[in-house]
Length: 159
Image 1 (tube, rainbow, N blue to C red):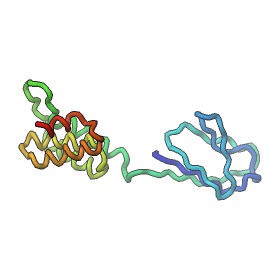
Image 2 (spheres, rainbow, N blue to C red; image 1 turned 135 degrees about the horizontal axis):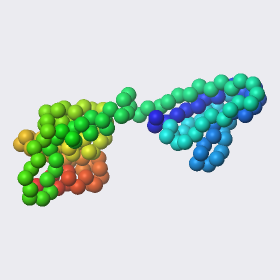
Image 3 (tube, rainbow, N blue to C red; image 1 turned 135 degrees about the vertical axis):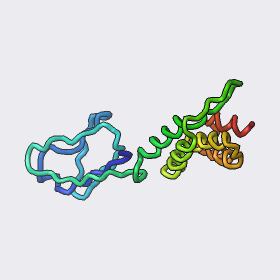
Image 4 (cartoon, helix red, strand yellow; image 1 turned 30 degrees about the vertical axis):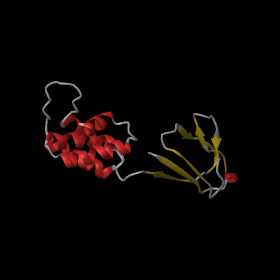
């Protein structure tokens, strides 16, 4: 979960204990009724037990995309089934299933257009099919998104 928001629904004087404890700082934060706490969902934390009264809390999970893990899973399928970049003179490995790879990578890019790796891998697939304009478009996107750090895309653009 990219982000978590806890909204206090009970006044803090209606219960004892309670709050949200964070492992990194050892702090327990208590919000007054209507107050909210926003934190990274992956940050280790937990609710502190209420020792008296009742504490009501509304917890919201904020996701960056409708299916945040989908793009990564599709990219992994696409990379496994597709063409691999070649940097040395060696026999080119045949892709396991180029059509599956390209379809999965295109879906990955739709789900997460900022994933440089998916753009780069799709570019290699297009290059292996002699679709040079499409490959160049993908490599340029990968270089831009990676801020020039995608070595395979840079080398492929230079070829």
